[in-house]
Image 1 (cartoon, rainbow, N blue to C red):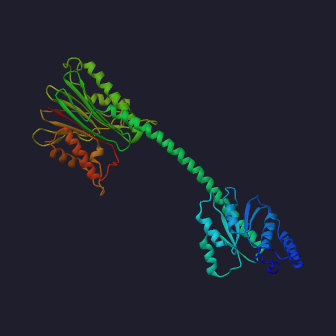
Image 2: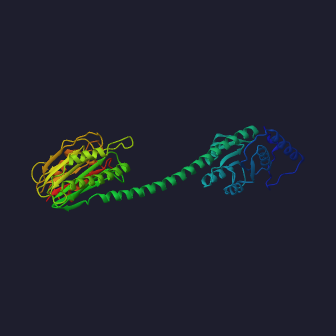
Image 3: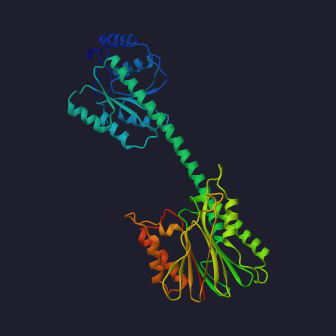
Length: 445
């Protein structure tokens, strides 16, 4: 233990009284500190702020012996000025009692500042009462060393401080790396988002207009993907002067993979319909035999069989209508039942289900024939509508959809689509749907 008897106080003028006792005490004190220990440490800066020159020299000598680089300050103001330098020490041993700015005031000022790195603060004090020590902690001190100090205790506290500062530095490096990663991730996300928006524009361009007229028929549609792009796709187009082809697809899954497959299937199906139409002569003069949607579904099923690399299938409705008679034939491949809304009379569903396309290699499909009379409507929709859930986990259901279509008989097609969207939003409680929403209606005028 370093005896207090060899620490002489600075007089009121800030000078040290000259005496043989002082010189001998200082010499002996420094000798004792040098013999206290010899430790190897990575060079680290430590600020010693003390107005007592004797204590300042003693601390500097001991810390230097342990391998630390020591910077000294005569008072709190000088210590504060030193700490402004980004390269300043981040460990400070501060005397409690100093002229101008005492240790606790300096601690508080440091904690309220925005220094580039954390500064570990050790208060050097002769105070021992619990309330005074609490005052130092509340001011921002991390630790205490009592006067007169023990070299071993000082070494232990400095080592603990060094360990904490090392962890803080490591955490700062990791945070900076994480921050840079977040910046890079944000940039990547921006690129992906822009690409997805372009993809969504391409997908939207492949869909028909929300409302349209074709060969005596009116069409309406609604498409709300659960992500930027979706796996639903639908379309209608003329086959010669007397026929209209229409289809709706729902690819299993969501997002980019489903959207890519939906575009591929849509293009393939359109080409297949035209190929069949050219073969039968339906596209030339309308006199050929009406196409077979069930045969085309079977061909698609062989083309899009799931494999080890492609685990995807889709549901579908595919139909052909003779615009002269309203005669319509369609096939249902695992898709929700189409709903026929006659101009008068009860609503009816069409089909018996069928197998999704691409799921079973030898799946067979059936054709369903009916007539669309003037004023009749045929609704095709995805299960994103009927399986939409509210906050009580209740499904929107086919029954609720049919009631909606019943209540909107007198509305034009654009109004029906708007009403459907509003009802789904109201039922679900938000626009964040868990599945793609799509519906298409054709009406014989």
